[in-house]
Image 1 (tube, rainbow, N blue to C red):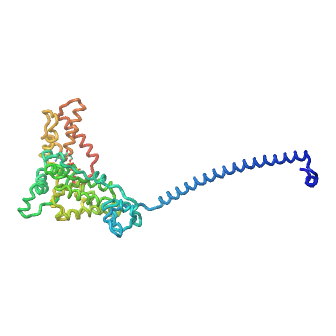
Image 2 (cartoon, rainbow, N blue to C red):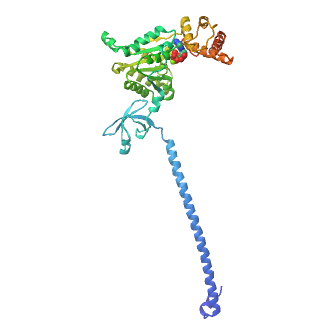
Image 3 (cartoon, helix red, strand yellow):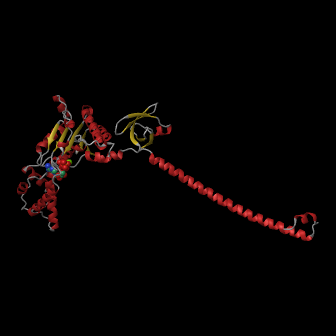
Length: 406
Ligand SMILES: Nc1ncnc2c1ncn2[C@@H]1O[C@H](COP(=O)(O)OP(=O)(O)OP(=O)(O)O)[C@@H](O)[C@H]1O
Ligand SMILES: [Mg+2]
């Protein structure tokens, strides 16, 4: 740099002028570089800001998710009533009613009987889909199953009793009116597995014009924890809408078992389902043209409450078939089979002491399989005896399962 004193005191000359010019240019150049740098920094800052925004959003999302995870689960309830003060809901499970407020928007979406999800403080969080599909899966509505009385062998007495208690009141209600007694409302079929209980119920439904509504107790319990009592209520409501109807609860032991010592919530749930069933059964008087058939192969397991007088009019034991019965059942199940002349059903029926109807059916099918394996269309005596051996050995493996009716 030149001396400042010189610069001030000395007059400008061409040389000085030129060096000034150079300086200015140098400064301008530096300014440009600085401006470029500034620009670059601004870009970087913008990028950083954008990045920051992105992280901020991510943080918000995670916080929200975290909150959601920490939140307690929602409960299922049904809308009972929409009043000026709010919405009356009834919780599933404990059946407690509560009044809760909702937004106008939510209110428009609700109607009595809608299923809703509520939180801990019983505010409605959202409306759930209707459960028609759930109901349809548990309850099978059948206009007329294809089993007839002619398909059932060896349990004539039981058949008569069922017809008298279920079919007659549906077909000729006036007979009961004339005599002046209330028609029986329900029967319980009990007995070992595979003796024709389910068949019998189906045959009754076939014989009457009644709608046949079937519900399997086991399905109800295993699949729909928390919904059992409501499903029972729905079942009878459906029956009332479809009158005349036969309600058939198969495997009723699953929902009407004795109280056990365990205090698990599943147990309490089953109890509630049974309570609902009992109350539906007690309301039979107003029930009109509805008959109830229930079946179980675990009679010993049933809670005595369900057997109290007035609930089932008849307890019908369906035993394993006797000799004559087994012969008949063989005949029934070989009706459509190509059976050789050497087949002796009397001997077969005599040989298979402990067989149930289902066993006889299985023997017939298995005998047919033996013939097919042997490339024959005719089924011989040897096929039947082989079939029984096979089934008997399979069954002895699976024994100890049902100690009730040994
Ligand atoms: N008495 C019978 N006459 C003709 N076939 C029978 C008889 N009992 C059982 N069967 C045959 O066995 C099958 C099973 O019978 P079903 O389902 O009625 O038994 P179940 O008594 O309801 O048994 P579970 O207690 O195990 O439910 C029937 O589809 C039928 O083929
Ligand atoms: Mg059955």
